[in-house]
View (spheres, rainbow, N blue to C red):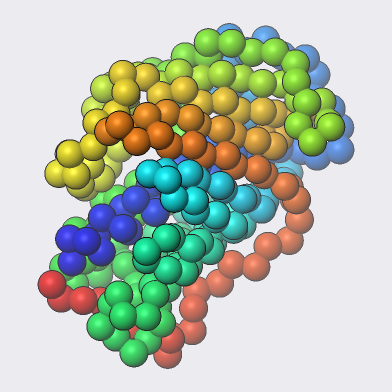
Length: 266
């Protein structure tokens, strides 16, 4: 169960938090010039545009410990009813799917990883099984972090914009923001659920003093690209996220009930 919990925590925290860095904004009309000096300014700029386009597709390319992971998915921002769907293949583990429907998480694990004939397992923050109880705080917090404005607002006290300037992404004009996060402050902040903090501490991983992110917004203040390149516990980690199809329809539904099996009890 510990191994499974670690996998769940890593996927949920990584994929959802990265998706949460995206925001929803009005498409088609370039936003007026705005002065952005702090992460709080950036959050305010994004929050003014969240009403119109509330869906997007995302692709994550992750390189860690010499292994490559590609994640594709879609997100729908709708407050407490927000949804996230991700498909990924993890080396030495296999293909995995994840869906976060409101505050309920579903995982489709590789055959043999969980002793059940059903392809999906369910983690419900209100569930009485040990796994759901253990992860209830994490799932609840990650559900809240799907609100990008709230996430950036909470990140503001532990992060600074170190540089910004004009750039291009896929041949289109964009503004590039370099963001530095104080990791010690981050681990103590409300952004990190207690369960995730405990799991991270138990893993023995060591974070650098600061983690440096770069985010690109297009002329309509839509995020189109996000990168992270850091060394964690001596291992190089590189993450690139691309956001496309803002405002286009998405299809994110819970798996059929007859395809969801019981959680492991140990």
